[in-house]
Image 1 (cartoon, rainbow, N blue to C red):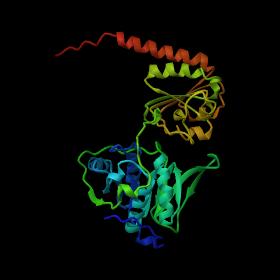
Image 2 (spheres, rainbow, N blue to C red; image 1 turned 60 degrees about the vertical axis):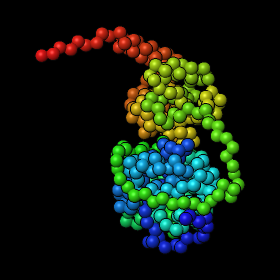
Image 3 (spheres, rainbow, N blue to C red; image 1 turned 30 degrees about the horizontal axis):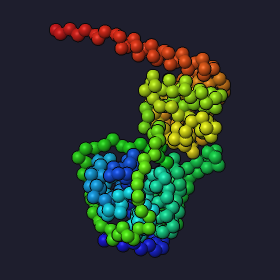
Image 4 (tube, rainbow, N blue to C red; image 1 turned 90 degrees about the horizontal axis):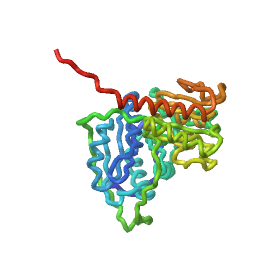
Length: 356
């Protein structure tokens, strides 16, 4: 039985063990960020030798998620079952996780820096009297000292700060969604499962879920091809040109922050430090200067093409191919070439096969 009582933990780091991750779930499915946390957690576990434990708060739908988590690299799942956990709500989640941390003493606790994750992380840190490094882009462990090395951009992205939590436990970090990749799933992988119950009752929860209204957002983080525009386009209408190119390539349109701030495109399309992180197979940057804040969100792309008038623009050094010139001349030709190549491929007769 999980009790909902938190107190100040003892400052005895040698008694803390294991790497914990929060398995965020939505509508009975593990979120992508939960799989990302399992991926980075698996790497840290392999390096440090400490067990990777996933914490799942869910209703009866949790059983299928337990299996998924283990197949994505988690060694043990602590599944706390209660109908109040069907949807995320601050206090029942924070109270339950806080109590578990006080009781079990994990050495590390990592969450995804989603809207819910950011809300939850700060609440837990206060409850267990520890610190948290938020929105990390790199996470490592100094195995000789058993210290979490949580790294995040600072001073507007000018530096990468390495932050340590030397005196308090657990060592907590929230990781930016889209930075870390899930590991390949291993069907049938076995792990330990601990099933617990919670004593929280619905009438004890002060917030009530009346209706779930899905947000109409474009998820650019899962796209294989991203065509992004910057202020170099000069006007909002330039994104229609990018839309045509993206459609031909089977990709999605995104942007750097300035066009978003100017109202040329919606914020869910923003790539960068204050937007979303993408790692597509192909990233095409059109009229983007390449400020470090934007690069932080696309530098893991497999292949980058930059289209820019300025041959000295910072984005050029991050690109595999740079096309120097006016985007309004280059992009339509690019689009037409793709369209023509697709048509030729479609009309090409299938190769005849001969058998011996």
